[in-house]
Length: 216
Image (cartoon, rainbow, N blue to C red):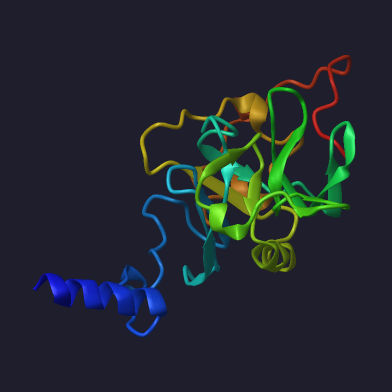
């Protein structure tokens, strides 16, 4: 019997026998209690994103790399408030962030968004797609380049972003991390969007003398 298992292991290494994998059952289903309507669902527990269409059909799902400490932005309902084809890391213009889609605000006043794995002009991407599914970032959600490009084309400004946590470790986001401004109809109207209507006290009071709340 030992020889049989050794032979199977050798064949697996050579690629002559396919291993039994859960992927044969299809992609992970859309999480329950993750809103309704056309939306982006981001699970900080499993580090996975689902793109859901208006009829509740799954458009695409893939692994991402989110906040290393699993606190930013925290759970809650946000929305895409800004899109730029590429951005760069603060104080380091050599690190590019392709397909930047901002949906939250960090405690330091900088934006949190979806973007491709950061790349440098000299050395390419800072890590490979094999590291997606881990908690690695400073707050943004890193994606494989092809997934980042797909999301960029699929989601418009105003698209709801529902952040959940399947691990039970991530705290709820405070109101200061939501985008400034008036929430789009998909957020305010539960029949058009995702979760129960948001009260007037949901957004923080703007402070004209305060810090800039997102980068450009």
